[in-house]
Amino acid sequence: MDISGHKAEYGAVSHGHSGNGGHHHHHVQKIASLNGIFISAIALNAAYVIIEAVVGWKENSLGLLSDAGHNLGDVFSLLLALFAFKLSKVKSNRKYTYGYKKSTVLISLVNAIILLVAVGAIVIESLHKFSVQEHVNGSAVSWTAGVGIVVNGITAMLLMKSQKKDLNVKGAFLHMVSDTLVSVGVVISGIIMTATGWYMADPVISLVIAAVILVSTWKLLSESVRMSLDGIPGSIDIEKIDAVFKENAHVDSVHHLHVWAISTTDVALTAHVVIDDLSRMAEIKDSLKHELHEIGINHSTLEIEGRGEHCHSESCDCAGDSGL
Image 1: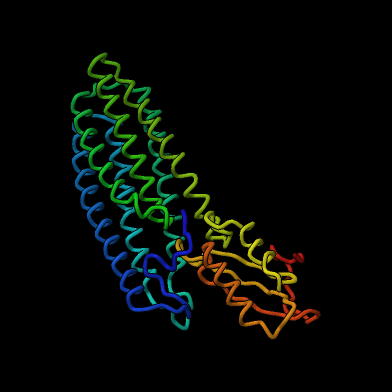
Image 2: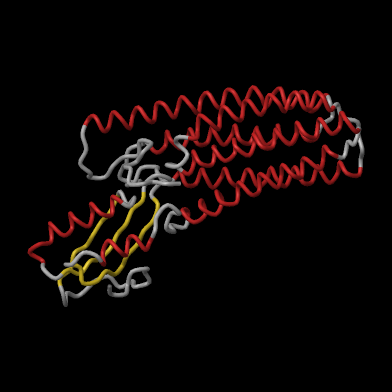
């Protein structure tokens, strides 16, 4: 996820930042195009899930049924991501001063958990299949999974451009890429079963599918948990933040430094900054905020203090309590 200094890419409300109508219109267009991509992806994948489930059930293929279950999870994930974008556009109010932006983080966490549950279900069913050998129509499996390669591949391509800017889009993109690989695996298992009659290829491929899902989900899960706990988002480099303050000649030290995610696209920072010349406070603050924005911090709140000034905040369990 690379936020790269963009403000609320998917329509989250800016707090007190200057902007113009054209800039706002550009964001609205981005939201509209992303909504369109997600709606198309949901329709395409939902249709494929139905086809895959019917063929998998009729032809007794666990590989197809596992993949259909996984794809159904992905349809749900796409719906949740679409819902997250809608929530991120809700304006702040007296009870939720950030609006509902944090819901985007919670939704990405839910998506990761759904995938983990799917992995568990596939593994249990695969182990059961090893003990009960059943005939599977290999060619039907291969043809159906072949359609999946096209469907998932198209969806992944649609999401590719936007996935670097938002954790929810990245989650959906990872799902689609892993689905494409999984479909390739199911095609191969169908070919093996047709050519050799080795029906154990079906549960073996199902376990490989489970492993692929687990690997692609783990990073999404860990990043979602970190953002839920108000940790520094993976896209933000704390060393670069330190450098912004250290390289400013007028900054003596920084304490009470906090960095956290407001949403999957918005990052906030608060800090107490001790400077050498209070008469230049506005100029120093403006310079620091601009540089922080350049490295992806689009909501910074700085409390400026003079040398020897008493800090009234009691809690000193922060990342930036040491002098520079």
